[in-house]
Image 1: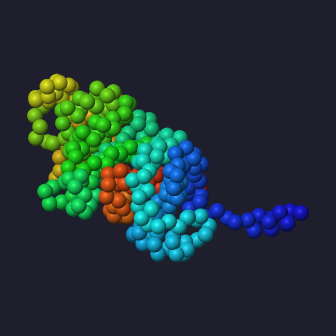
Image 2: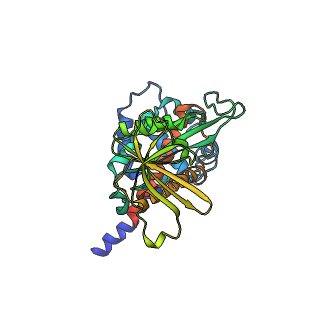
Image 3: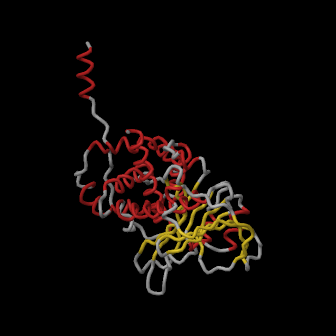
Length: 344
């Protein structure tokens, strides 16, 4: 009897890797699809659009149009994928027909409701977000994507959580949109935001504090300030040889109309000087330095989106269409991480 059971189980179709990948969100997306009002002559549904767009970013295909016309519609993709053929024009229209908010809800569902492994050493320091913006070049006919007088680009403003090493929020804007303003739109109470010099401004520091959040931001070395108090420099002996001229002090900026007192950590590595400003006084000198160094993780995420996921190739020219593209790329990144962590 046991041999017969085993034989039957071997004959059952095995789920594809892609099926396992989308399994966590399949029911959620199907429910979204069922709740959408249907047009009387609608032939292509949100569920099919979502699943195939997911497959496109997973597959590594260089062209969405070629993938549809030469593989999907010619029946050359495995039947096990259950991907429905669709005219490319119909698929393209779906970027305008379905709201980016649908994809936002899937993304937030994954971020908030799914377990991703946490880094204990970072968790004890609070919730930590790296923030930065990255340009994606686009064609010159995209008038809304202003960057310079001769070039067009869109900018992805990303919040990347260090605790779980995942993207948790973003904005899509024209290339010339101010990164500081983008950050202030995404502030969350209790989060410590880690950023480079482009985010340094008195009004930004004050707004973050007013939002009951925190910051660790590199600032320019020529800014004028008054020392209020010198703090004890706390560095492990094993790394002291790396850093020179280390200072840790409370300061007040000469031209800050808010007259806030901040903490400034200064050090030199090689020939480069670093000034790291923060409002957090509970961390050691070394913790502040290392958290700023972790900012590089967001640069790696941008590289992953552009190169590994071929995000440098914009598949739609409207702002809603590009927003859907970024949501899907980040959803795929979360699903891939979830699958890897579940199978380890």
